[in-house]
Amino acid sequence: MPGDLKVIYFANSGSEANDLALLMARLYTGNYDAIALRNGYHGGSPASMGLTAHSNWKFNTPHSFGVHHAIAPYPYRGHFGYGDAEAGVKCADDVKELINYATPGKIAAFFAESIQGVGGFVEFPQGYLQHAYEHVRAAGGLCIADEVQTGCGRTGTHFWGFEAQGVIPDIVTLAKGIGNGAPLAPVVTTPKIAAVMAQKVHFNTFAGNPVVTAIGKAVLEVIEQEKTQENCLKLGAYIFARLEKLKAKYKVIGNVRGKGLMLGIEFVKDRATKAPGREECAQAVENPRELGLLLGKGGLWGQTIRCAPPMNITPADADFLLAVLDEAIGAIWVRGHTGLQPGSEKSSPATRASKRELKPPAPRSLLPALRRTSVRSLMFLLRVTPATALSPSRIHALQTFPIYVLPRPFPATVPRNRGRCTQGFLARARRRRLDFLQPLAPGPPLPRPHCRAVGLRLPVLRRTLAHAARLPHRWQRG
Ligand SMILES: Cc1ncc(COP(=O)(O)O)c(C=O)c1O
Image (cartoon, rainbow, N blue to C red; front, side):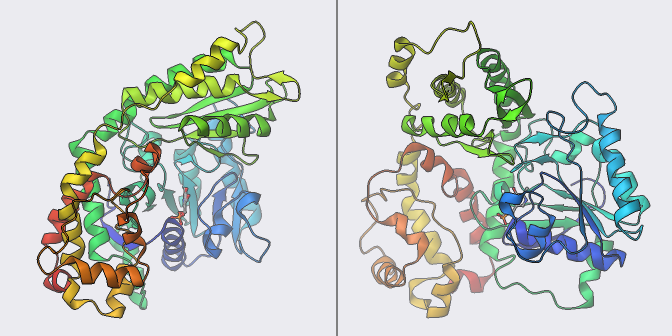
């Protein structure tokens, strides 16, 4: 990380990481108020739900004490649009106004995602964070970048999302990608800020556990080795250009935006009024399910497809995604209108027929590869806590490690009585319903998107095994 961002605390989830960041900012500055952005999401714990500004995610309980929400720097739907070269400065001015009008003039923290994720992949106008950070620092506050979604190269041009805005935060929170499925949520800050935590004891049973931190290290190495960031840049640009073509074809698409493999497609009922296309988006997300593609949506009205596929997708995956989207959006039919631009080719029987031809690309030998490593994976579990040393509390501890790396069917090649390991261990673990063992049971293969999305990727697992071999003795022997 740039600057003096050298100290890392480990939490288990993005919400927890943001809670800790807010705590540190309040302790360090001695101030209480915090500013976050409308349309932002920072988690579901009481403190991070307070930072979140989306009614869908805020339960009707007391929260948000001392938190104020500035206007969303949302060029498509916000106060200052794409055509306004000063939009970044103008949106940032609202942070200053909020400090002046809603706080004692001093604040503890300013939270912003580098691209708003749950809010529908909203990319800020250039200069926004730079100016907002200036106002925050002038009021004594710390600048906190929530990189839970944008971190680790997903945006393509930079490894961290905030870098695209030319700023260096005081605290950065991470989760999701850095763990590749494992509960890992680093909070990165400067030694000076971190020192405030020495005032008291801050404790969290599972935070920073050796297995999950080994996974994090492996993830970073694999991203570097496989040039995953470059893949995000290349395929992101390719998909973006093709989405623009879909926008020209379908009038229900109001806006296409984003960076790298973090692309938003916002649906509208009418491009002139920008009335949110909630039903249109719901159909565009629902139709592809039959075709083997799972999509997520976001935005206050659920009007935006959030296209954030695994960072290692291939050109064939991208083409599949685009073909399915074309088909799915063409099939939208809401209150007597289709999603097509007037004059576009109608959704015809020929298009319908193509639906049957859309097939996901072949799974690139993922399962055979997993079969080859299955024995080592299992041994990894055993090395962390050998069968001979399994106490109920240790089994409980294991339950928190999501070693759900092996998609079904777990290969029949698991050695039945290999060494001193498996039978007793598996039986005891199954009796206790260990989550990570469930995928070991034989069963129908998961549909392909799951194989990719669930659990650790194979190279990450391999490196985790290597790191785990160097873990302290007590973790190897139980
Ligand atoms: C930007 C952002 N911050 C924080 C969180 C909360 O992370 P978690 O769900 O791991 O608590 C999320 C989750 O979606 C997120 O997208």
